[in-house]
Image (tube, rainbow, N blue to C red):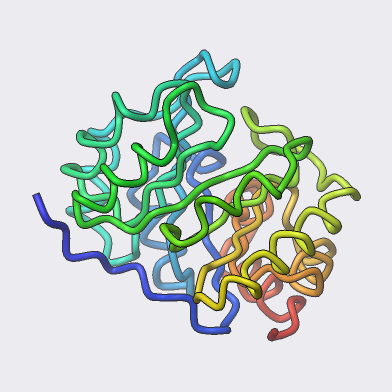
Length: 231
């Protein structure tokens, strides 16, 4: 199956991706519609298997439902031990980008090849304590690198100060590659931390609680975007 991905190539603009992990699941459709009309660029969907992280979240049926109802690119983050078991179903469900963790058990080069064969854009994520240098052998196959600025598994955590150095190191790797690769940051992003992430090199920001727990999610998106200077 070849997807017609809505995910743009890295373009030097700051993108904001609300994470539905923090949304009101009772009213998920309305929540997504609100951030879509409010200027969100992508929709971030965290998939947790209860093994790679101590939490469970969504299945491919949620991605399929969202794909039918929103025009936002679906940025699917596989926090799973064995991504090779998940890639096909999420690609068929309509993911525009699939991000796997470099710390997963499966061969990540094989996972990226499978994602590309499905016509989906490729991403790799690293935890806060993972050496960014491990990304270098994979960089030619990547459309996005996701730096976790919290330890993955739960929403509502605080941005880790050491994340700035991680982001800077990843930005240098991207520069050396000469390729257009998104540098996405996820964890504790709000109007106060967004400038720190962008100044360190991020050009895509995932925000969950700061948007979906806000009194006005549309205003929250605007405040994050205004706080983050263009790179």
